[in-house]
Image 1 (cartoon, rainbow, N blue to C red):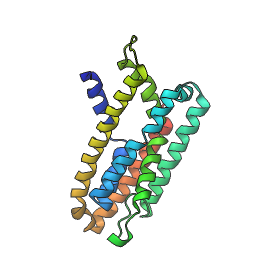
Image 2: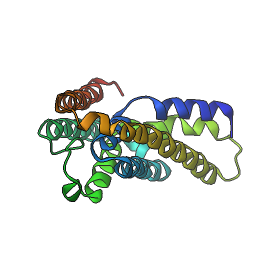
Image 3: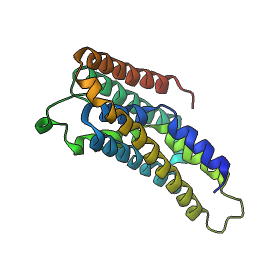
Image 4: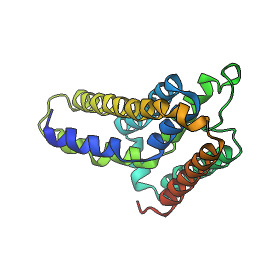
Length: 203
């Protein structure tokens, strides 16, 4: 495994994005278990992009303006919906008693959806990973699977660290209503900013 691949993958994974924001929010609102579930869900959301790349669908997304725009604006709409839910205390930062906590399945579904609706991941698998597959590679698909597995393992590990850190700070946050209100608005604004960035990004 080349050091260049590991370094660039780490930068991509660790950079604050939709998955990081969602995992942090899950950890703050619902604790360590929810943050690990969120990290797992965001990692699982990478699989459809990998399959699309292997089947050639990601290349279609890359070359078709209509397909790309459809996925992109679906992602924008979902991020704005997440922001609205957060402000209404019904989304990732809805803090409830233990008996009424957000269902694990809901945490997983939202985490998967966030990454599925991110067209940049498909472009990542089309434009980035092939650079680390030699032209004379005997089994290029197997090599791509190995690289993708490393990328996904790194995603899960980094997101878990983010989430558990947020969970460790949970007691200091939810016991202060004013701080919780500020955090809720901050995360809602982060979802809006990520949605706007996605909407304004060039292909």
